[in-house]
Image 1: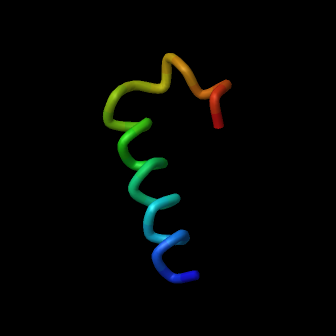
Image 2: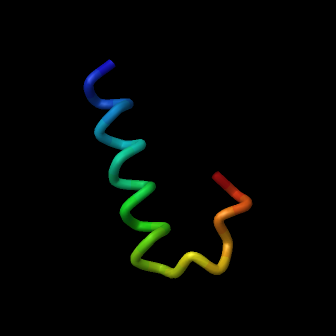
Length: 26
């Protein structure tokens, strides 16, 4: 379960770094 949470956090940070131009995916 911890791994899934970590993955979610990483994905969220990655999306923010890439740009908030596609927040609809989340």
